[in-house]
Length: 148
Image 1 (tube, rainbow, N blue to C red):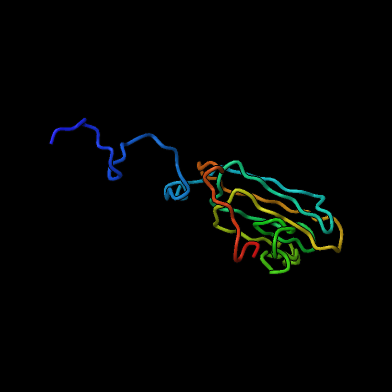
Image 2: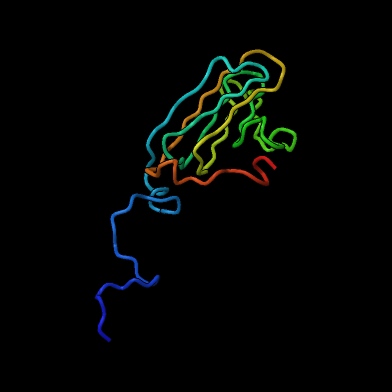
């Protein structure tokens, strides 16, 4: 059968140079781009939003006070994030010379740190390994276990 030469069916996609995508395994296997931030003044009943420049590979949050901080993937004012207990609580009462912390191997483009309405200003640090995947490739984190 003679034709125009180019296959226009859905069974063939020409090879093209694409950047890494959200399901690109290699992006999560290599060492990540370092990211470090924190605060020394998270107010009681306050919330900080941490926005990453790239999708994360791993995140560690460390509480540097004796008061509780909460780590979550949706704002405390969204859905049932707080009332549904969709957060990790770090109480800052680890043993002498230690800080309460959590490390998560997760992909996300933002993270929230909040404080209950009691105590004094909180101090925390966040460090992450970022992939080469742009945040535009990340799907919204919502639903059961996040804010529902």
